[in-house]
Amino acid sequence: MLSGHRRAPLSELCSFLNGNGFRPTDWKPSGLPIIRIQNLNGSEIFNYFDGEVRDEWIVEPGDLLFAWAGVKGVSFGPTIWPGPKGVLNQHIYRVVPNKGVDRYWLYAALRLVTSRIEAQAHGFKSSLVHVHKEDITGQMVELPPLMEQRKIAEILRAWDEAIEKTEALLRAAQDHHDAYSRSFFKPCHPSPGGCGSNWSDFSMGELFRERDEPGAESDVLLSITMSGGVIDRDGVGRKDSSSEDKTKYKLVLPGDIGYNTMRMWQGVSGLSSLRGIVSPAYTVLIPKQDKIFPRYAAHLFKSRRMIHDFERYSQGLTSDTWNLKYPVFAEIKVSLPSIVLQEQQANFLDAMNEEISVITRQRDALAVQKRGLMQKLLTGEWRVKC
Image (cartoon, rainbow, N blue to C red; front, side, top):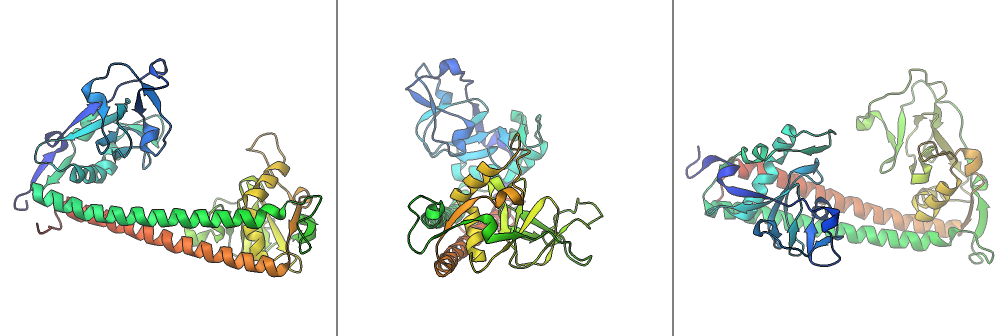
C-alpha cells in the first residue's frame, strides 16, 4: 500500500441518491426540467415538473450523476451535469462526495470502475443493462490524500479540455465539408432551365457501365462499408462468412466504384484502390472517365441529394428488402459540371476529408492517452507531486 493511500469501497466515499419515477401524467409545459437518460447523452429536449420536490431530486449544474441503467459505453455510467437546474428521473443517481473526497477525482474513479460494473450488469439485452446499488457501492478504489486527488483531477481535466477542443475542431471541419458538399452537389439535380452552359444532363447508365465478370482464385475478398468504402476484409479482421464457392463473386479493379445493392439507399459505396472480389450482393461500376471523374463520383454518391434519389429508386416492400440493381440505377438522372470542375471539387473535398482524418486521429490519440493516465494515476501505479 502506498504511503497515505488506502483501499476503500465507494460506499465509504460518497452517497448515491436515486431520482424519482416521473410519469407522463407528471409532465407539465413549465417548471423544473426532468433530467432523463437521453439528457445525459446531450439531448436538450426536456419534460417539466411543477409540483413539490424533495431535496434529493434536485440537480444543480456541475453535480455528479451516475446512470445505473442504459447502453454500455453510451448512456451507462458517470456524468458531470452541464445543463440547467432540474429534477432527477429514475435510473440515475446523484452522487454526493463525502468530506475529503474531490468531486472530479471521484468522477474519474467512477469512470475507471464503470467497465467492471458493466461486466457484472444484467438486463434483457447484452447492450442494455442495469445494476443494483450494491454493484456500484461495493467497488473498491485506491484513495489518495485530498491534495493528491486534486492534482490527479487537474491533470485529467487538462486532457479533457484538449479532447473537447479537438472535438470542436472536428465538428467545425465536418460542418465545413458538409456545407461545401451541399453547395457542389445541390445543382446536380436536372432542372428545366439546366444548371448553366458548363453543365450537362446524363443518366447513370451513360456515366457508368456494370462490371459483372468473375475474378481469379488468387484475388482477395473485399467488402464495402459505410465509413471505409471498399476494404480488404482480411486486412481489417472481418470474418469471412461467405461460401467457399466464389465462382459468382464479382471482380473489382482499382478505379471501380462498388456499392451495396441492398444498402445504396444509405449511401454504402466507395471508390476502390484495390483489386479483389466482392459478393454478388454488391454492384460494381466502371466510371466512363470522359464524362465523370471517379473521385468526384465517389463524393457525389455520398451526398444527401444523391442518397435521396438512391432511396427513391430502390425497390422492395420494406427497407430490409430494398435494393438498387444496376438496370434501375442506370435510369437515375443527374446533371454534372465539366470534368475540369469535377476534378477540382473532388480534390478540394479530398483535402477536407484528410483534415477530418488527421483531427480524428489526434482526438483518438488523446483519448487513449487519457485512459492510460487514468489507469496509472487512479490505481496508484504513478504518484503525483503536490
